[in-house]
Length: 415
Image (cartoon, rainbow, N blue to C red; front, side):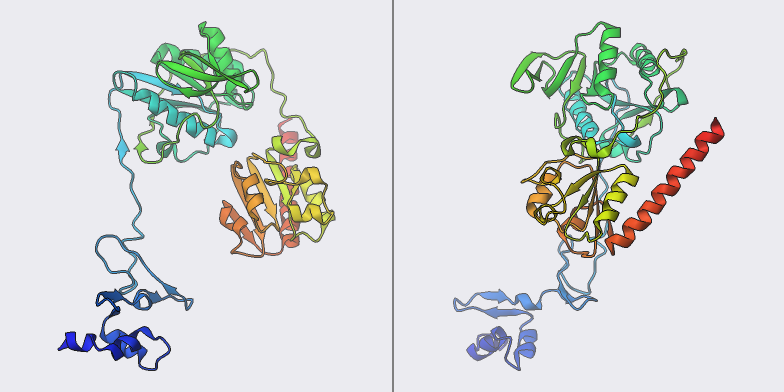
């Protein structure tokens, strides 16, 4: 009988016509299914899902064979994914990575090298472990997710700042204790290439620089200003470019601590006098590490320039701000301006046009200040502040000035 009713052309027409006054009752009677002209059952897409607290229909895709939208159950979808643990109990050899640890955290460059180290362990006979050697203060909380099997953290004060002699002494002790198969360094201006060169000279090794393709047998390096590739046998010490490998993202690692004994650091011949003040406006956008960028949401340009000075940031701008004459053309960020690789990119009043988003694709951390919580820049940002840009910049300047004053008082007390 039900089959006869379901085949009733009038009921099928009512079930398909959302404007018909009997649509809801008929559609519910057939449980969201109608027969099409071919006689096959069709699910009514308007019956799938539930109405959320904001009045919009939502469809919950639950794991297993659960029906989406039934009871609004999301427990299965909210379960945290636990990655499988990669354990190395008794390693036959080690590959040591000395990351830059910019700001006390692993950079994208560092994670690429850790991923390459694991690729190399899989091509060498025996069971290998990847060791990370970190100096000074560490703020990194996810060594395990980055692929670190063993961790050597040397946090003594003599390793802080620019301390190549103390760090080199520590690396020579690690060389004697672990005898690693390979040493991997970032080929960067943040200390990796300098420290790798010093270790190579101390051990009498011929390192590979600007390496970007590495296997257990051969290494391809950039040469002649990046215009040609040089292939050579893979050495023990490599200084690697970004994207030399794929970062670990499918496994967890133990990150077990290793103690290095017997390190005796003598009085260094080089004294670290701290960083020199550099005019941020004199730094080209392509080389800047901290950029304060303005968009159409900026109305107080005097305040914006003052904020850049107090924060010590290089000024950037969106195309709209440049076209309107508020900023010079060489300050434009984006695919039609300058591609930037800043560690911190602070976008104020920038909605996020596609060309602009392309230009900041290689930035490490993006912070957005905007009144539109749904704009593309807010979606891209690691941290977003929703509100009036003028008020937020004013408060940010006060915090920066208070922090600077506190640091100066600490230095005077120490003196």
